Image (cartoon, rainbow, N blue to C red; front, side, top):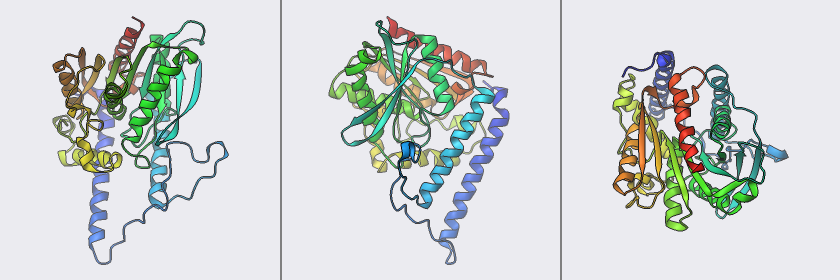
Length: 365
């Protein structure tokens, strides 16, 4: 199906951005080869956790190296862009009760979870869903406007408490830190859900893009460690194989993006997240490659036609079905990877929201 006309100008800008990045990277490599070329940037003097605001609650931030400063600028630009997107093409979330909790776990940095309650917490417990945001493992967070608005709308419309995990970002924190944090949040929700208004017997997990990778890894980790009764997994444009074995570059070629540029972007994401490229073959990094998918929760998978990750979602659904797990997949035609944020202007995005809400409502059963 042709790309929805809504994306025409966005695609032109995105292609120009990718070409500019590719040219910049090539220029930098050529300069490094010349005897009079500039030397490579100095390594950061110390890692900085930019997944949380610098200086939050009066803390003194350590000095930033050049790469950390560049990341900080990129993340500031990303959240500013996200704010503009919500105003221009998104839908603001309703005012609903929200609580935040600081969690700790062995071997990983402390992190927040934010619970979006569909109603004021009371004696009646409601279902809960652990929610993991997208952002290529290196940007994003629960404070991003479109992420916050989406969690608000999903909680209000489904009657399910959305428990958003503010996991640490790469490259300051790499695999498997994010998975261990998300798993710790899952265990906490089962153990303390009733204290925060969530029914521990009706808990699901949801992940978008990179968050979909973390969500699928958490279901494997939970099966291997404790077997807590996760009722449902909802996966939006998930990446399930970081080896790239199921990337569908026909989707990017159809957008006029050459395969070498698309591969470069995907490799950049993997190298940022994984300490070593060989880690991509580990099942918690690439859940699709697990020896077995038996005993995992029922799944609802949503993919987009013009998204190179469409093959990951389809292959993961097939693997679940082959293992006897109830799994359904829907591919939205004529749209791209970031479709869910365009609910203010794109009918397919509104239908996507309704599909997610319908899936979440299964937790009431």
